[in-house]
Length: 623
Image (cartoon, rainbow, N blue to C red; front, top):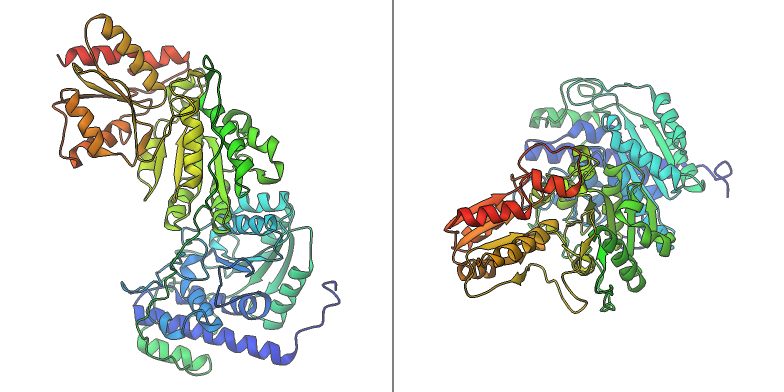
């Protein structure tokens, strides 16, 4: 049936949705007043829209709202969380009494949504990310050949975020026609009127320019909302946008379209007056105290043991190249693996996977923020997303990574071209802060391979890990250090050289492991013995066993890293050793010691203080 021939909703249906919207608005105000904080006016502007989605358009199982057969709802304007919680309660996911625990320490209903509660797939609240999450959820549904849709409710304030338009361009390019964006154009931001105020035509043209079908409606007219949802569901071939003109604080005379109310709860007296204006009170029982927190969040599906990687003994292979080969190897066994790359697939070598499995590869183009959030959506659908770009460019998406951690999302990121060892491209392309950045992410794992075998095996390990995993790969080709039989557990490290007479422990990772081995050979000629460790897992660190190696090497420590000194490998090692109760007697941290510039890799490694020559100097200075 075409959109134009669908029968109009009956008057009884319209009345039922209108009453749902009234209840959602009142419950949102009651919850924020009880909490003493929150965003009731932002809830009121979208109450009719949300009621239309939840109680008319969505295919939704309240007993399994995150199940594969359920449509998805993403509240990109996460500060309107009470509205979402009210809708979930009205749908039967948990009782409406639970909404009244909003923002309490003991409640799973936080100030902004997180996947702790059923019906939420990703944390929102840092604005501008929900559309990309929705695109990932929608792609995941298509990959599984499910006829489910994803609805994303956005505010007009966040439509100033560039990440929104990265997501819109991506969805339009890939014709993600099971994605429906609903824009709540209430014209009021936190501190001022929004950029385009109520000019809905601007938003319509912007979505249409990215390949979307877009329609403009009155966001408080229930009949218009239901008709727009019917039209969006009936269309195919393009993502759908519903641009809804609304009023912040709609339904309450002293709130509607009034400045100064953003993020302010009503007093009890104001609440009573507002409820009376909206048709009178609703009954809400006392809460029992039972938690409705989700017991399990999506984690990477397990897969069988893989055939071992294989490289010629005399091969010289960049770890970035081994990453691509590993993805192909994993993809042959694990059909849930998906790769998204930021227009550098021929540099990250994600193209190896893409050539083998084009149906599971997405070109993300130069839009790193969107790539990360799409990955969060894919992971919520049970996929294993590997997201790659130059490591330095992932800094653009740091907020998305931070929010992915709040989502407890098991995404995998690969940052290539790290450090001064990339050479001639210069400092704009050199990631020298990424270890510090990813170490700071809650529950993250940071992996830093030094040869093809370790890169291959660590990529395989990443596919099995829970939480966010970051793989740091290098540009230069490097000789093999390991064999197909070697394993790389997380946490862990490898002792590559050792003796009973070691004068110091030298810890490197990636390119600096090779510099440490050069230093070992030269010092050996001088009669000086050192112990060399490849710290392939920078976070978490096995501090207890690393401390044993330090003791065996006499207590003196040298760390060397192709990274700035702040927050990198050296600080990670010292922290782990101190926590293990074994601080070094003497310690020297070798790291990139200035602002680098273009040059050959060997020139830069030496000029900026991390070559074998500098390691030797540090060892001899400790004597």
